[in-house]
Amino acid sequence: MHQNKSNGPIRPHEVAVFALGGLGEIGKNMYCVQYKDEIIIIDAGIKFPDDELLGVDYVIPDYQYLKKNQDKIVGLFITHGHEDHIGGIPFLLRQLKIPKIYAPKLAEELIKNKLEDRRLMGRAPMITFGPDDVITTKKGLKIELFRTNHSIPDSFGVSIKTPLGTIVHTGDFKFDFTPIGPPSDFYKMAKLGEEGVLCLLADSTNAELPIFTGSEKRVGDRLQDIFKGIDGRIIIATFASNVHRVQQIVEASVASGRKVGIFGRSMESAIRIGLEHGYLTCPEDTFVSHHELRKFPQNELTILCTGSQGEPMAALSRIAGGNHKHIEIIPGDTVIFSSSPIPGNALGVGKTINMLYRAGANVITHSPLTDIHTSGHGGQEELKLMLNLIKPKYFMPIHGEYRMLSIHSQLAQDCGVDADKCFIMNNGDVLSFSNKGARLSGKIPAATVYTDDRGTQSMGNDILKARRTLSEDGLVIVATSIRKSDKRLMNGPNLVSRGFVYMKEAEDLIKEAERSIRQALIKQLQNSKHVDKDKLKTTITEAASSVFFDRTQRRPMVLPIILEI
Image (cartoon, rainbow, N blue to C red; front, top):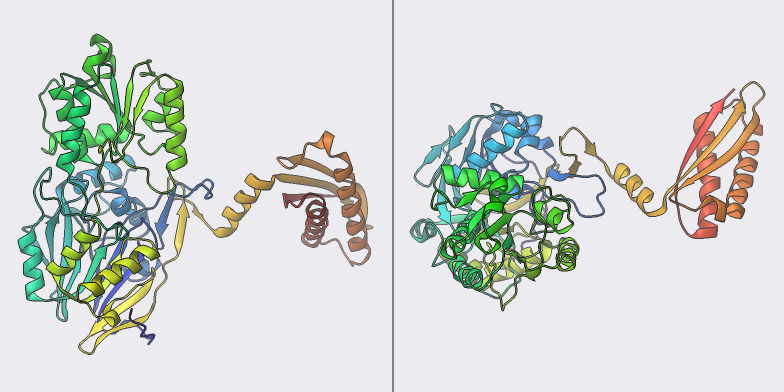
């Protein structure tokens, strides 16, 4: 791995590459290529919060650098329509102006749907961008797409031809020789490699797996076999955006004489867009409304829904918990999870499966025996194939946690890229290219931003720390009154516990804390010339916290309330 630590700004004659998200993590993918006074942005994704990020709806990149340099932005180029690549667009458009958004057709429709929901349509012109299109900028950058296979139709890699060489970004990819939909454009990739590629930025999600990822067609064949062997109603959950998988579920339903009911808002939107634009095909009477389901025998029905990741508010979780207004589990139902749990979601998925079993359902999940799911990301053999097709001079692994990036870097070296030309980078690190070669040229702001669903609130670490404290150790309110004229403690302190201890069972602890706080307050008032509420609040917090930790080894949040008389 290259270790050049030279610092300095992005120089006008250099081509700079950097990420605002997607390095050292899975999600919030956002990459930039800058040359002179032009910036090309590739993707604008989100990441979903971990369990400890209480009250956080989305994790997004810090757009500070782009806000300061928005006059240089040529456009936002989208590789495909997954949330970790397009989910940040509404937040981005609220903060800065994007001249144009270039996206493949399906991604464009998904983005429009997202912007309409948030009343942001018109904030940036949308341009349909396909594999036959070329965008040439004022400084001579040429941007093109090349088709790849992934778990969503219309997935592409991006090539940016610069005066110093071509930068290639793979997007998310796998190599599927029997795909559902158009095949990868091997010719275009090989042609880029023959012409010469300066730097390759490549998806590292499955870099740990020494495999060639299974074909989507094999999953379709297996689903058909499973559907034909089930006598009762089928409830099947998958990602709404995996339109290829949805197509195969529909085909399996038709082949086994079943009608399909759709549940989940994102699933309804994805199927509507898929049918309108030809990504989904089926007989006209395949889909039935919620109210029509009762007209058909159970063994003639498929319920297609969201919730394959155990999301509490998704359709399958509500069905499993008996909280769905249209569907409830009937003993003999078969529930199929046509997905694998995303890291961090296993507990939620397990909880949903337990509820389904309790309600009397049979459950089928992905395993080597069932073979009802395959990844949309290439394993090591596919990563090596991409490296051999593109033949980059320099290599920058992207889209993965650090260990994935590191393994991918070693694969690149195995495929002939020099070790000192492989760059494992962090968000914000700038890799600059000139006629003299490549250098790490400093950092730009690339912090993680926590936000709510509306994007109106940015939550700092202090807020998250406070929420974590409340959730783990509870809250103690300390109320007291002080006569300002003679600095006399009039009433209190009186303590109220919420989520820390049960007051009636902790009288000794509460009285000890009150005595300690009272003594500390009296001492503070006697040694002060005037009543300083901020200092008094600090005194209360320190005295209470000391007692609580000594007695319980816990640190509840202390909220002092001082009434001045």
